[in-house]
Length: 149
Image (cartoon, rainbow, N blue to C red; front, top):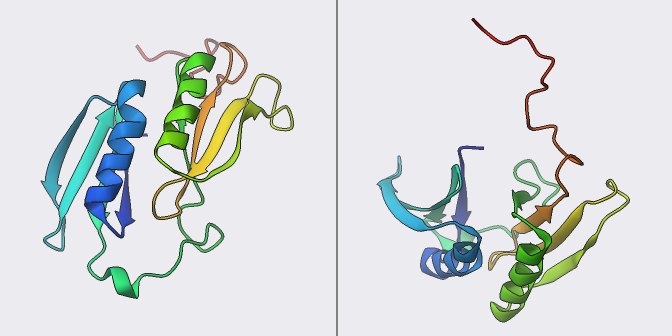
């Protein structure tokens, strides 16, 4: 994933939340860019991707998040090891976010799948995941694939 943009009710609150949550996971910076409606997009960036936060033009007209409407169901980010997942869970608690499940191993998904599910300040479902090396490597190209050239 290169980036994802989220529309939030309070961009400053969300920016603080995402920076405090993701900073210790290697999301080391922030930048801004103009949006197509004149808004400022605040990007929190880390290992190979970024999350853009856009202020909704009318927070009072917003509709509550419903993961089963068309749109984003949840956003999952990978952590480097189990210790990072446990530390992130403690940060989520300190930030006052609602944890919906975990951190624990979700063998119903696959053995070794350790995750934490929680909500951001607007109720957007987030997941942090760690899997032991070799147990969930579908995102890597198979070695048997023909290489160009």
